[in-house]
Length: 288
Image (cartoon, rainbow, N blue to C red; front, side):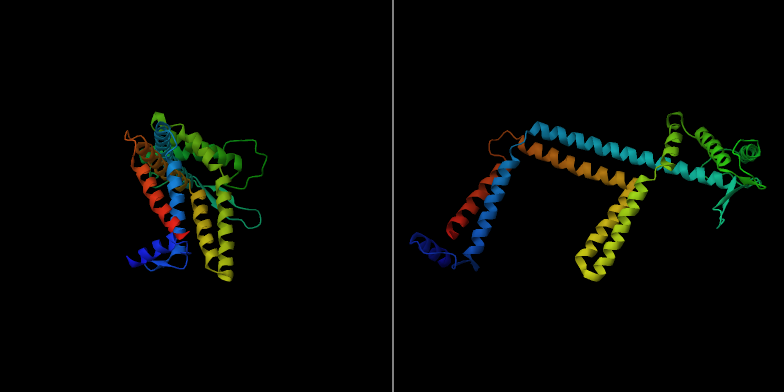
């Protein structure tokens, strides 16, 4: 306590206290700590200003948006599951063959499938009938204007086959989920998020190269860029990240509103502000 006594004595006699020590620390450090506590006390007062009812309503809205994002995530999973089924069924009807000079060529597969595609609930005989009808339709006249080699499938025929497969998938869906077929088509044509994610991934790779040359902080930026790119590219990660963010925000808003809505005139936040002000003000005063 002698340090505190010497400090108070020096303060009352008008001597500078900046070079004195309290509990092993210079008073300049205690003064800065006091100013920091005063700032936090003022911040606590600002946090006491919002209306509790509005905060609770905002928190409820954020929680509702989190639930919506989770529902959308499940919705996306269903769409991607049906897209995978579409790809599997198409693989029993057509095959893509690389052609370096002219690009990939698509040919029909006339051999009947040996098993029903995983995800379909129908007899093998019905599935083979569907396959035969699809192959027959590929041989029907159409107006694409292209010269066809034997067994080759043009883009127009391929699109018609995809629609035929989608109609088969629709028969496997409950009535309330058949609109997923249209959303499957939209998902196939939605390349914007993929390109954006690839752009961020490229930026992350460039930043990683910079990190190897200029130091570790750039490496952290590279990791962040790669993580953001993965969230952008993957719709499930994107929706789950949004859901977690809204859920955390809602919890903070509702907890904050509940704290401010206490009936006592001196609730927890105000007690914290009072303690910070008293301690911080005393330290700042002694260091002056």
